[in-house]
Image (cartoon, rainbow, N blue to C red; front, side, top):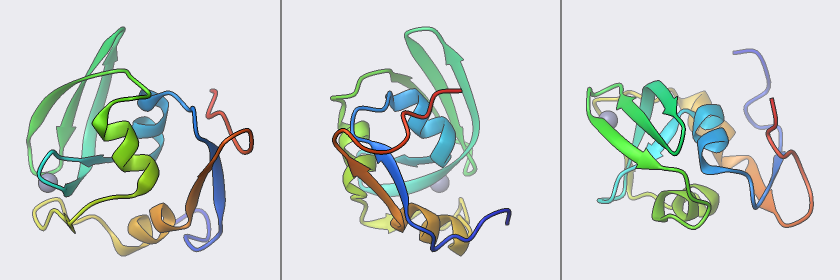
Length: 108
Ligand SMILES: [Zn+2]
């Protein structure tokens, strides 16, 4: 654990979805289950996500997608029990805020 998971973090509201997913290593499924990401393979306009419970998904980069909105609003019904997302990671996610015009753009 390199940093304090309870420390507040600010990201811009308009950060690209792929940057956000690559940073958070979390993926909210359509059914509201939050999965941990094992592999994130960006391939231009789309990316292949492999979760810790071995689900494979193809996702498209869009700031307006459902996943982007859910991640920014931190909406999920439950964390996937098979992915075993560590508590510090969920705390870190909970301490992350998205603001218009303020915070990191998550550039490399
Ligand atoms: Zn999972």
